[in-house]
Each structure stands twice: as C-alpha cells, then as structure tokens.
Image (cartoon, rainbow, N blue to C red; front, top):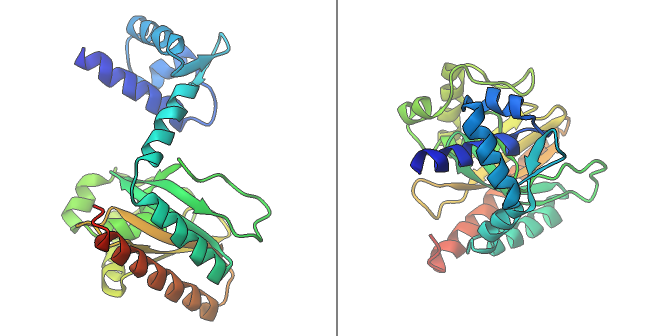
Length: 247
C-alpha cells in the first residue's frame, strides 16, 4: 500500500513537471516503475480524474487542480502576501512574486504582473530550482552551507548561461546574501530578466520570500530603488504576520 501511494505521487509529479503529455513508455523511463504496475495505476488515476488521457499519452487531470487550489485557499499568509504584492507593484511598476521553498525548489504561490508586461508567463503553481532564482537564493541563505549542500543535486542544473552551476560559487553568493539581507540575480533563471528578493521573517528559518522581477538592463540606481521597496514592503508583511500569530 505504501509503495503504491509513493508511486502514485511520483507519477503525478512527473506529469506535472513535463511540459507535454507523456506516453506510458516515457512515464516508465521517467519513473523506473514496472510497466504492469504503472499501467494499473494509470487506469485508476484516469478513472478518478487525477490524470487525463487522449488514448496514447497522459497529462495532469482536473482533480489535481482542485487540490492545488485548496492548498492556496487554506494558507493564512497568502491574502496578506497578495496585498503586499499589490502595494509593491503599485510603487515599483514591476512584477512582484510570493514564493515558498519546497526542498531544493521554490514554489510560486502568488504573482502580480507588471502592467507593462507584454508577454505574461503564468507563475502561480510553477516550481523552479532554488539556486537559479533570487527567491530561492534568499531562502537557501537561511540554511547552513552543509544543509544547502545536502539539499541540492549535484551537479547543479542550469537554466541559462548565467545560472550558477558550481556549488562553491553558490555558497559564496549565499554568504553575500546573508551579509546584505537580500538576493539579486541577473538572467540566471530567465534571459533578459533580473530579480531581487527578500525573505519574509515570520518563521525560523524563513520559508517564504517576496521578489520583484525587472528588465536586466535597468540602471543601478533604479535597481537600488526597487530593492529598497522590496525590503520595506517585505518587512512590513513579516511584522503583520507575526502580529497576527500566523506561523
């Protein structure tokens, strides 16, 4: 029973991580599960609407969305974080994010897109490697170097040519993040985009962070203004969450 439950979760994670539907053979290659048990599990998941199929390939079904929405609905920090994102976007004009660390990744829980954005990529529910995002780096900096090394895969995957893929270089960057209290990355996760992030200090260690994404070509003075705004609004959010007793 435990093995079946674990396999079910791994199947759903593999389908969620793939940009395209996966055939049974591709799922078997991805998960390493025996074809016979995989076939039986997929039939059950399709019947329960957790997975949908066109007859040849499989993708995430509508009941997976219901579960994700329930997680957001039950998070007491989220409504206050959303207000913070609104205020931050209004002041900076840039896209603002609220995310939570999920092991070696960050999971986007809320986003307010810049009104100047011409091509909007939906972020809520997306999961990105922590080491290539400012959100992830500021949350990894909450951990010790040994904890970070134990957490991250080796070698580190890169998303762009600017991604940090060397653990020693990453730990050096995290030291700087701890010293200044915020993280900044430029084109490490997305070409043409820079990002500054600050941890929301209402849990120890912090699990959540707020960030602002901006064009990578902004002048330093503008980046500094945005950084100051992110620090100010995030500290205000953390104080509110602590005052409300939200943990």
